[in-house]
Image 1 (tube, helix red, strand yellow):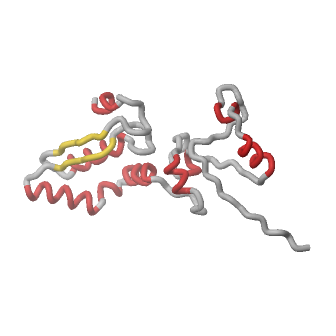
Image 2 (spheres, one colour):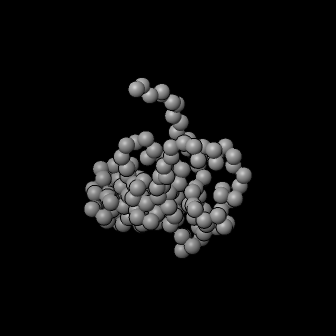
Image 3 (cartoon, helix red, strand yellow):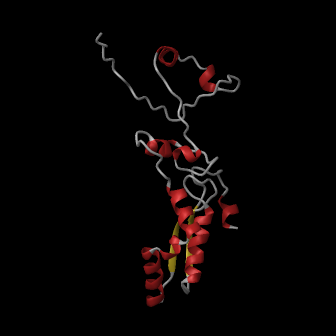
Length: 167
């Protein structure tokens, strides 16, 4: 018997989550006839979009960027957060040729090392341990002057939380 080939659609709904509880659940309480028909009629599966399933530390919330990077990859895509943290833990960050060359250049020219980037504890876009490791590297390399240009109040931390990170 020959089976009819039916179309398949991959539908990505950023910010559209699933939870069986309806209290306080805007999606479950909304009138969604098209969604309901697709849900009840078609094949479907739920994906985990946080933590180790998408290349983040266990318990770390994901976001649409992390989900998009993993979707269709056929494997877990390790996120920058995990890769950088691992390089700090195993010491390879401190042997990174580009970073060491930058420190050597600053020392040779009598300049200042400028570190620019997000600082925060959210984990998806920034985590403060990475900045602290770069400051440790500069100290270890005996860089005479280092300035931090911090971008704060990112998308994965509370608004106006930057002052606390700078302290």
